Image 1 (cartoon, rainbow, N blue to C red):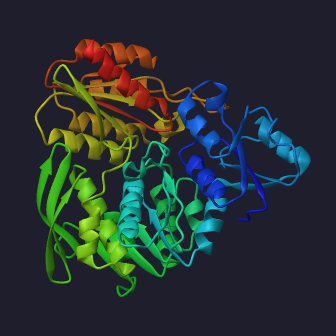
Image 2: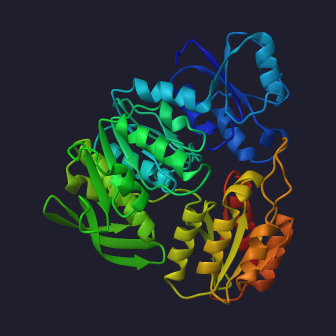
Image 3: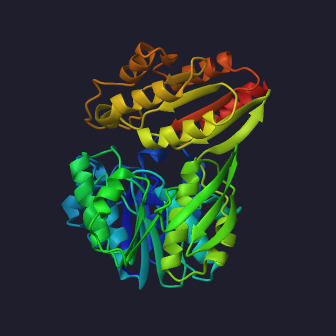
Length: 464
């Protein structure tokens, strides 16, 4: 990366693209971009914020790619027929994937922490970044979610932070195989479960990930991670979990609707910890973060004090509001593990659950639809509901022959209450029809910023 270069981000509004574009811009380089959501008039506030940073925005029609010296950044999934890519090819522009540019920055840092795994990456990234910030490490943080600790009136979409401390903290992605590009000082492996790739592919990717790091942090409660780490040298790694064999361990867990507490055990010492985020999964996330910063040299008492000040991420069990005795929660749950964690956290307390889930694509339904249906049928009780609309679709040639109804049909067949209504607005109306005082409504899904607006609309509708 060079300050003298000009970067054009195709799909700049994406959860992985936007923070990277901000980091590049704050580093002094010229940045421009386009996005389908901008063309369609969605998420105007987000694009206004990008413009305020000095980032030029264009329609996704190729008009922003005009110079052979531009470096065009796009995800690996962007089709060659997209006008920006057509223009880049005609001009002979250098092209990079988002992951390649991120890895270039990450690997150049003197110290680095990469957070991988199927679930919890964004939360652990936010926790590690916040702890290192409070410890004086002045980190650069690259996250796929907005970190509430860094939200200000001038920074409403705080999914990245640029620091001068020589430490780069980033979540890394196994879904496209790009995790293989990163060479971290500390590799954090949260868990391994079915998502975008086969288990065989995941074992290979995560095995290489921890092997190339100086130190590894891994989940002693996750059977796949335990199997992967078996036989690897223990001196350069720390395990975390609830089991007594863990190097960084939690006991005496107490769950609250929107918080949690536990006793931390490490190096023969005990620490009382209270988190501002709920659920055992977030306690596990905190253990991973504490283990990582320990390897970076942060004293545990300082780390504990800092992690207790972590206020969470937007769209991660995010309480949007309450009206008529009904609480509405906005959540990023979109794969079996994430949805299981969200529903398990909710089922720890009384009250009927009205769940809405918008799948993040047709491909994921094909890969994990059966597992999603199984989790929903298992965790939702006889009085709970799951409503689903059609998957996110922003255009392209994806096969749309298998949709959300294959999941709701399986839930109904298992005895649950599930409905598929193709349009999201109809699901919203149905939620308002069903809602009663004492219910909890959870809005789940990924790859669509307007889900947060949808959750706020539900709160407003309840108030009316």
